[in-house]
Image (cartoon, rainbow, N blue to C red; front, side, top):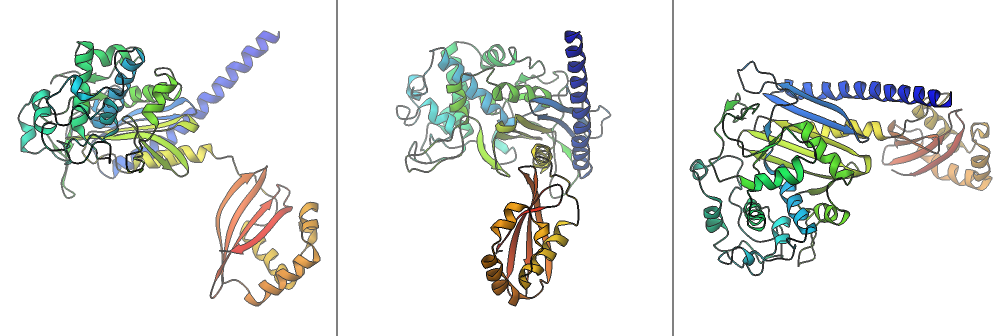
Length: 460
């Protein structure tokens, strides 16, 4: 009987989680639909919450003017989101003992500038000094003509450096084309083959491809627009210009799998993940806030790992919050189609991660703060409104001092509730009181029964 009961409880718990995920997914979907309504062609979106995929959906069209809807299997160019995969392949070879991060470029390309002084890790961290061959947000005339990767490297890594290696950070696609070629030389195989065998197949990323041929199934069409104009179909960069710096196509669902694998430690060793996700300190002592193909940031107090990607006609963002086992992936087949959507979705995740503020019996925060403050100004607090601990804390001497300092201010002109939160099962509110020539801040703790456990007034 106990086993049967446990099974029933497990089924009920699973059903409750599924219902919760469905509700959250619909809420996130409405945010996406609002973004698309502001202008766009198509979007592929995934949201991971608490380690679970709560939204994976296509929105809009795979080509402007067409009738083919974006599905969860429509492939989008992900641009520089590719870079973290390139670095992961490097790190897997390091784990195999076939490569070292300290190995110098001269091992494979001795003819390149300062090749004996620039390491594999320098390339990963964008501190090599090699000029970026693709610094603009559009495809210029050069990139309409095919080029071999080695010719690209000769042109852009064979001339003067932008700076002394290791001394500063500057984004360089050139370094990542070089990483891809190094991988090919070490393994004796095409980068696409290494990527598929070491990452895509083990993680079940069946809808992800590298440098697909024209006509490959389920490829979205890229679009650009200029100065508020309508989206226009565009022609991608010619062969040889993207490579391991940004040559992958994927779906939001597959990239959600990738984020989960990284966060759960299912692909890389802890040491390798640390290289991928830790910032570089330059020789000047400045931190770069960039690891191996992952930018390290902070969003509303939480550490993030992620990357944007842009190739002609496509825009991608993949962002994860490791502490919450959460991630957001947004892929657009419009050059500026992502916008603020990833941040809006992250805010939705953070709202769900915050403990619920308890419902408190009695008057609103603003009304309570105004009433308690007024009585403190008169030196006549209503001690029945306080918890025993705060009543004891509020000694006659403290009350008299508060009345002497606060009384001359008179009644506040405005009472503004700034925020509420939860701590210790209590409502914690922060309120600003505005006077003619100054402002004060009140932090109040209230139990659900309405008793005030703390009422502190400070300069605001």
